[in-house]
Length: 397
Image 1 (cartoon, one colour):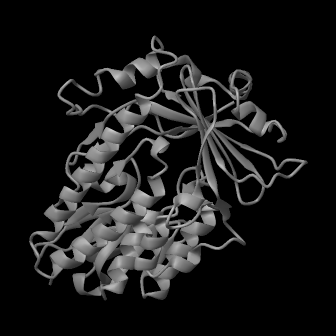
Image 2 (cartoon, one colour):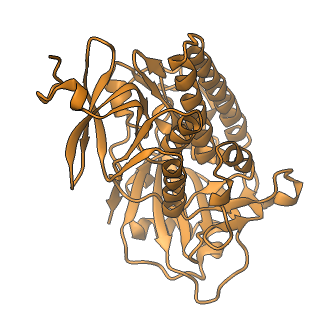
């Protein structure tokens, strides 16, 4: 009789085609793609770390959500339309990109918690088993190639079997790196984030604002409940990366546009949250019995505003590739990896171009690094593999 690692007969352990580890947009998109293809799926959402903060979703996401059968997760009752993106980049003057020029319409400022929950609910409606507040950890493989996966949560601890794993666990990519994949880090970017209370004089302006500064750049946007997200981006080894609320307020006073935009909001007493924002990519995004999607596969500089869009796309494509692979297509997973190579190359090219437009502080380390080859990006443009320079997300008082 065959037993699993817990000592139970293998036949008594629930089995799935695929276990998806990670319940964010990438994991939910993978589960939706697999569910629509008729696969049996378990989606495990660990819900660890700080809750996700509102993010911008480009209008093009409508196409992906429609393909996933989840286009109804966006509505103006819970998510705030974004009609323009403003930037002071390469100049003190503001430039505007209006949504009227976008064939897909306006973008969105998301209620991230609701957005993620509703995507998981759409997967559940397709038959996916969703394990909330539950981490999925691969515990070994049997002779027939199936995985035993431990599910650990506050209310349960059990094991399941599956034929394939999707790693959608975010930048740390736990299952993938445990399987031998290496994380290739391109820069040191971090975000200092603060949520400001609603303004006492509500504004109808729901545009995003990006403003370059001597040691990085600022971002601010309204959130659906009237709060405002303020973020300062700099490199982890620069002095500004270790500042708290007082230092953030001092730096804000040196801006031309961002300070004026947030001035109507009370300054909170809460701590500043520090989060990784660097560009990182796995050196391989699939292996024997697993594939990575979303930030676990590739996480990009937030200047691109493509984070959730990329997560949805790579999650969907990873799910489709696993379905095709299980159906006998040996080219499905290599094809997915090639797509990730192309997406990464385009991002790096666009990143160099956009950062290259800012010339006002040529001697400042932040901008010098983005114009010349540095220790994390050699002259031949092949990034070296090294430990992640950013510690786990935390807060600064």
